[in-house]
Amino acid sequence: MLQSTLSLCVIFPALIISHVSTLQENYYWREYTGYVPPDAIAGGKDINGDDIYIGQAYIRGEGLMVVQIYPGTREIQAAIKGVKKVDKYTKILCGPLQNFSWLTVTSSNLHLVLLNKHAVIGGHEDGQGQINIGRISYEGETKIGKVNSFVVGDASFRFADNNDREPVVKSYEILLYYNNDNNTLIQN
Figure 1 (spheres, helix red, strand yellow):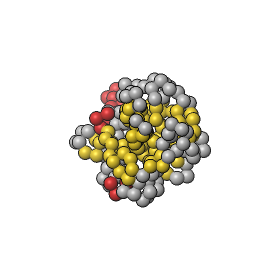
Figure 2 (tube, one colour):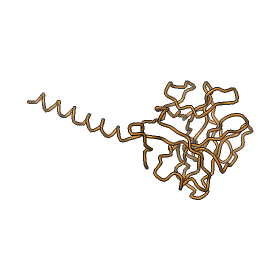
Figure 3 (cartoon, rainbow, N blue to C red):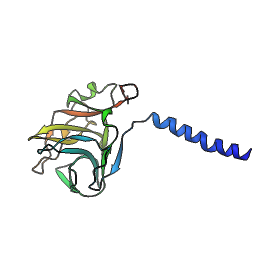
Figure 4 (cartoon, one colour):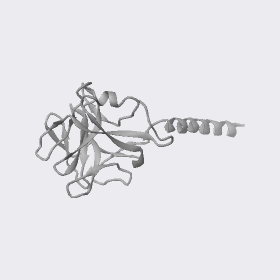
């Protein structure tokens, strides 16, 4: 009797956890140490045609910023009040690549276009709100950066350019996540 009760105590919570996890998105952030895991999400190509990856970095007093990761490079640039360079507290986006898609939007139509869609949350700006993941083509390569989605009607895209500046862009692509089980977008 005791053994069957113990079995139920172990199995039942495992079933609940398993069921709950199927309701969540299947993407996650791993610590980035210079090594790119096989399930990392490539966000585009650099000027040489090599993959670049989507990351996030913690900037003290500013928040958790979306960053661009070049494989093998530890120092990363984050676009926040100019450009900040970081080499720790960095993560890389991972998950099933086939569940992600890019959608072209503008800073003024973002919130309308995203109705009933799941834009991937890339971090937050302290005192402002959540930011999403965006990209553009710039000077022959893809640039990954943050979408200030907390500003309704003017959700601009910002990134760290090659000259340590933080340009503001009004037309860009935003990263979406699809629930591949039924081929629909996860809704917020």
